[in-house]
Structure formats: C-alpha cells, structure tokens
Image 1: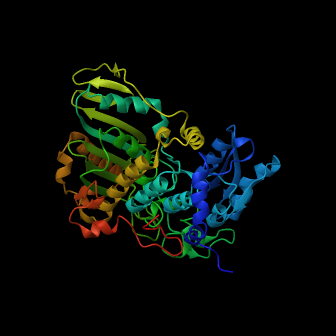
Image 2: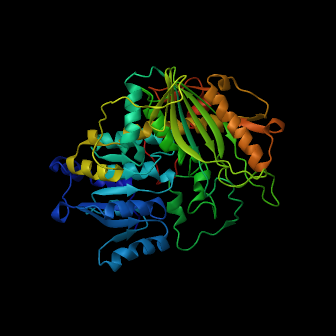
Image 3: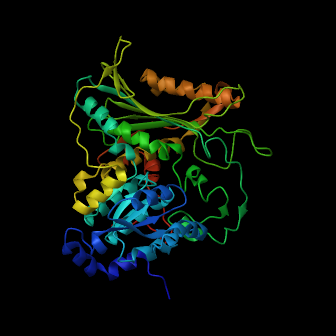
Length: 489
C-alpha cells in the first residue's frame, strides 16, 4: 500500500482540521489531567536536552520519540521503559504526525529538516518547538511563519538568549537612546569542538542498517552515504547544514540583530573567509571533506548600523606556533557614547564601567522550554520569547552571509575590500582571522588566497536581492519528492 504523504494527509483531513481549530482554546483534546503531550524528533544530540527539559516539567508528558537511527531510538526509549512510562517510537515523522495523541512536536533534527518538520506539524494541528536555525534557507523560514499564522500554532525557536533577562536589558538600554546611535552590533561564534578543525575524509559506503538514510536525506538531494554526514558533521555540508554561522552562530546573530533598533533584514551583505584545517596525508594541504568555511567574516548594513560577525574555528588547540588561540562566543555593541560589553557600559574616554540604565524589560515567563509550554496552554503567541517570526529573520541573516560567501571567488590574500574600512571593528576581525590562520596552521594568507564574496544589495521587504538573479536562486533550492517545502502552506 502506498504511504500517504503529509500533503495527502492534509487534503484528506482538511475538514477535521478546521473542526479541531474551532473546537476550543487548545484546538485539540487534551491528555489526562490536562497534560501537554510532547513528541521529540531528532534525539541523538541536542534532542536529548529537549527530552530532559520536557520530562521534568509538571503537566507535560513525552509520549513519542522519533529518529531515523533505530539504535538511538532504542537507547532513548529505554529510560522510559525502565520507569514504566509509555512512549511510542517512530522512524518516519509522517507516521508520528498522524497520531492524534500528540499535542506538540519538539524538533532537534539536522537543519535541513527543521522547516519541513515545522510546517508539517503545524498543518497537523500541533504546536512546535524547533531548534535553531529554524530554516535551511530564507524561503523556508518565511514558509514557517506563514504556517504558524495560518494554522494558529505556537512555534518557539531554540535561540535561548531571547529568554535571558540580561540580554533583554542590554537590548532595551540600546533602544532607549541614552547611549546614542548604535554604530556596530558585533558578534563572535568562535569555538572549538567537533568539525571546527578537520573532519578528514570518509569513503562512500552503504548506510548502516540501523539508519534510514532516505528519510535522513529528506528534502536534500539524493546522494551517497559517507561517515561524515550521520550524526554530526552534516553541519559542514551545504545540502544539510549552514556552517558555523548557522550553528552556534545563529544564537549570536539573533542577539546582534535583536539589538539593532527596528532591525529586521539588512540592506546589503558581504562575506569572506575560507576553510583552512590540518593537512590530511594524501590530500591537498589545508583541506578536508567539508564545504562550509571555518573562518568567516560577514558584514551587513542595516541602514547606518553595521552587523559584524566573526567566526574562527581554529581555537583552543595549540597550533604550529605553540599558542592556543582563545574561543569567543559573545556580543558587543558599539554606540556613539561608548561600548556595551559584558552587561556594562564603557563610556568613551573612561576606564571605569557603569551599570546600564534602568530600563523596562518585557518578557514572557520561564526559560525557552517553559515559556513554550506556558504559551501552548494560554494560546498567547505574544508571550513567546523566541517567536518564529524573529527566528526567521535571524536565521535569514545567517543564510544571507553564506550566499555572499558561496558566490565569491578566490582572490590574492593581499586583497583588501573596501568594507574593512567601514569601522575599526571590521578590520580588527579580519586581522584576527589572518593572524589565527597563520599561527595555528602556518598559512600566511598574504602569500595565499581567500574567498571573497560580492557585496550584495538586498530588499528587506521583498526578501529578495536587488538585481542579482544568481543570488536569488540561493534563497531556496529544489526539493526531493515527497519531502517538499511547499510554496503554499
């Protein structure tokens, strides 16, 4: 019997879906004792944190787990069985979404599944907590927003800093105007760990029997399996991930954009850098199997305020010079009157920091997970700390940087683009990248090359590039049936 796709499912249950939407404030029949019944999809890594967060909440029950790896499913389900707690397991999200006993879906899959999982769940009448970035490209993010609005779903994004009172206070202090205009909103996502240095090269082989690789591929193009895809290093391949700017970086991107008064999407973007890693015997130097940059500088213009984003993956490990270059995952704000750093204000010309101005901070209750459950109960989308609309805009900024980078070309390392002279913090970031590459790998960029993307003009309202059809093509991509992100949600 042919398996029903999500599109078929929606068509066949349209009337029922409307009836559920009109039935009451929860849009569904609740579980026993008014419990919120949650399914977690993608449970190998970050999904484990989702399971832990929801399991400890009163009035919340995890009733289903979903993963393409049957070994992972069995491992994650075992504690539930040991506690005599019933939990259903699924390999295919489409079967999970047919389950009327599920109220909300929490998604922690690879990036290329985030939007399709969100849209399908909204269409099935379920609320969604989706990990960052909410989309794999700009088109997908907008479709998530449309799905949340059309089906009246609560959709929360995994950018936890939105639930931080400290960051909210800094953003509010900037918005108050007390410190003058924001000139540069700067972010760093430079950390060590898996895949930042080198992932080497893995051979093409048959997928493990315990992994449904077809479903894992989902919306991505069909291609052979290799060991650098499942379970983590997919981050560094364009078909599945978005590089470090869309991995750890989307957290800092969200803060940086949040801090720009009225900041939605930029008017221009340029990105540069490269993927420089340890040499692998038998392969060209400073290369590995990955595609995304591990060192990247992206500059966006929001109409007078620059967003400067620095990524350096070559940190926390001694290089050829014997030094360990420090990781940095942070945000700073350069204003007319001084700098906001570490939650303090540093006035120009003074060495002593000041406490930030006392400003009103409005936030929904709880951390990101608790805030999500609160809003599922109250149906108050306005109380979401990390609503899907904000999620889309911040994820889109990451995608725009990557589009410039991907359209770039190799240029002599001595090439100095004009954007480096826009603000001293832009030049400082590029200098830090070149020094780190030289110190860790012994690669002198002044005698080599780097990838320099074009300066792209962007229309924030239309969410299209200005006069660049080639760049527009990268706002979306072809999809593989039946895993298609729809034009009409």
